Amino acid sequence: MLSVIIDWLEFTVLDAQLPLVLDTIGLDWDDFKPLSKGRFGYHSQYKWSGGNVFLMFTATSDEIDIDTKVNAKSGIHVMLTGQGCRQYSAKQDLSGLIRRLYLLKRVNFSRIDLAIDDHKSKIINYDRIHDAAIAGHFTSRWSKWDEVNSRQASTGEFIGRTMYFGSQASDLFCRIYDKSLERKANSDEKDIPKNWTRLELVYRKERARKLVDYMIMGDKSLGYVLRGTLKQYLRFLLPATYQNKARWPTSAWWLELLDNVEKLQLTIKKEAKTIEEMTAWVDKQIAPTIATILKAKEGDMSWLRQIIVDGATRLKQKHRDAIYQYINKLEEGIAA
Image (cartoon, rainbow, N blue to C red):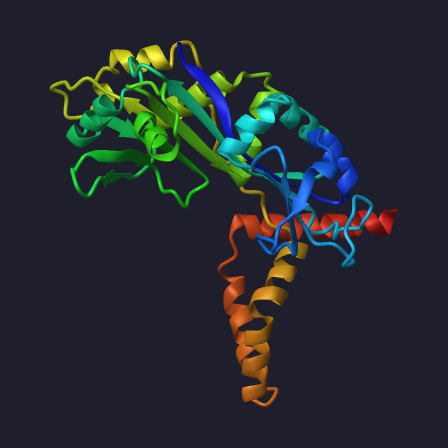
């Protein structure tokens, strides 16, 4: 029996104060203790006494309590680590928390990890996946895969084995590892399964938000969205004589894992830039450069005029659309 869990949850609530955030996560302020320093640019960091759940924020005063005003623009950042998710789940429902967060006006989901455990490695088997990857018996939308192995110096025995499909710096990647080895190396538990493989998908930023949209608006289970993502990004194959791997049949164990799910589209369509956004970008990114050149040329702007004239010949459709939308807004304002 495969089980799917949320193994990391990280989000920021903007334009909010501590009472709202604490009420949403269902924990008491009195159960949080201050740490010596902040994190991620936030001045203050508090840790839940029940486990690895962290609150980060920047207060507007030195004296901090639940009614202290925090910088609403930078918001309140909440992080539940893998262990923190398990500790929090003993008291609260993580899926319910995500549903409550979804109802808030401004929430940025920074990271969500979904993990599927095969405690007997019957379907998700590390050695089988590793052998298939080495042999090239798979296709993937991810352009690379890596492996990281750790061994005991005295005996040469493995103490950790992990594979990564996709870049760990990207907003979506897959991690597969020998959970039995990882648990033995990091805990004193005695009843650890001998053949335990874990597969995790790490969703960040807009990919995390898209995941939540599928969960809430699409009313999809954790298992469905995890397997739907895998179906979109990765396929393990039975080798065949065709040169084109797309024609190779899918491995039976992979079909069993992904049975009855659709591919989930997690690609993010980039919105067209508006004239206001373009103006802000010029101001932030290149205004100092323009000012430097003008000072050096003692106010001569002929070079800038020539750049603008040349640029007008290279306008793309997205630029024309931005001009059209801007003029329309101006005309609507005048008409009003």
